[in-house]
Image (cartoon, rainbow, N blue to C red):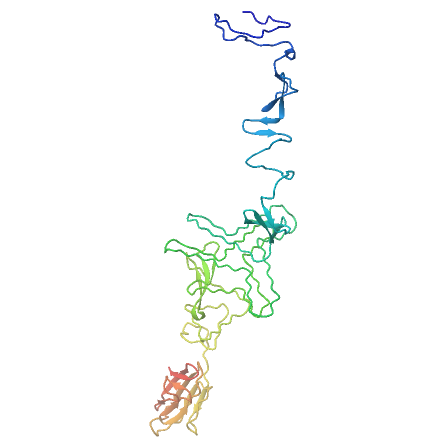
Length: 448
């Protein structure tokens, strides 16, 4: 079959029809080409093919088509670059963008109640928004005039972490100058009250956590402060700093903990089972405890730059265990077993003699040993001698001379002997008997 043999001008018939006796599917097949396709007439041709562009006719010429690069359709999105005009209308589920040049829009949308500059709009009803005069935002500062309340209610029953207010503050600039940063800065002032009882709380927190059933575990922290620093440069970290002043009475910290609880506990950073704690209960009875949960090394050391004064109202200091001192231990007197004391010189007694006329004298308070050299055989008690007034810790030895008859020792007015009656007495029998008495307090003599 011959092909590619036509040249020049070819005039086509008005109508091509297949012959009924020849099985041929196509009337005309093959490629139509010339050395210059532009010379082919009556065949439409696009000269600026552009992806997804819509094709339009130029000048009403059936053979002239143009791809509109500013009007494209990718199968789902029609994109128009430039203005869109309509002689009847344009409708859509919504319009987005600048609507300032639209006309004929009625005020049937939202009306504004209020005109405060920077006022925050809140919902009033389906057609009105209120411009709040007491709540403004200028782009950087939110200002509230009056009380502010955050009311958070959480009703879910699934496991959750619920936050009433969270502030996430980050300083990210690599600054080299000085900076002071506050997570929350609170400034309260009231200097105008002239009478009445006024209370001011900088922070007032009342967290309450209870279970409706006797199961599970609950932990409540009125405040948890975790301050962290680094080691670059010179650093100082303080968990909390409390200053109180200017009042008639100033308390730094006042604790009211239910009796039986721990008022103050200081734990080791290495082991929270090692701690120091203070507990106060009824009558102000206070217990200081140190605890080493692995050994018995929770020693209590007082490094005092001055004196230590213990002034118990009850008069006694009880120590269970030993007391040691690297320098010295002094007291008005020592009581108890002194057999292990060393370096004690024998104390010289103040020996005084009694019995020369007149009989019945009072023994001197300075006497350590009263030697009575005169007695009486008259009566059961014989001669009468009065003991000096009892003085706590005072020791008195009384000795009769070998030839002296019976002698009665009488307590002074207001004193007792061996817990007996006031002004009581004892009898020393003749021929060298003796007795040693010690004053337990300011009114009682006891016989050793």
